[in-house]
Image (cartoon, rainbow, N blue to C red):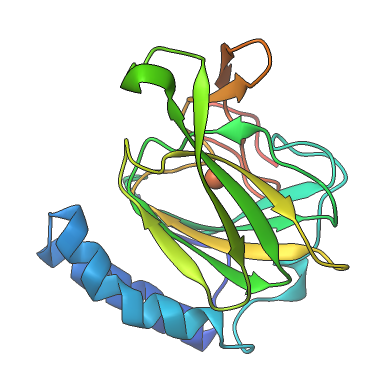
Length: 205
Ligand SMILES: [Fe+2]
């Protein structure tokens, strides 16, 4: 198996090399994240690496209509992925978790975000408490290390689509995660997929 590059621009490939150097050398999430931050921050303000086809909302996707989740890179063992999430103005993602540590940052547009935690810190509870609201502009980013900060919902807050970049220590579009309904406190299985590539057990796109 080989690593999968959907984007092959030079700045992005250089970023991926640096990411792999760091995660191969540093197993502790806190330390790996600290080392990744400078390169991730620089990527978010670089206009020269993301092709437009990965920055457009999709009419239909596993994340919901008007939301595109595009794989940009994943390791051959599916232990790390980099993806773009493109959200049409005013559109909301479902409330969802990620089940892996990582970094999420804004590349284009603006984004509101609501972060939740299970009520009583019970990981099986569908009842959630809102613990933080964030507003992200270009170049802003945050880390998540589950369980802290792992459950959120995102809304595009600008006149144009928002594009965020997700570096996660799993194949986030293909793992089986959870979506939450705030009013009914229900938890349901969730797999977002990617718009541009298949998961290994799906038919090829
Ligand atoms: Fe997310």
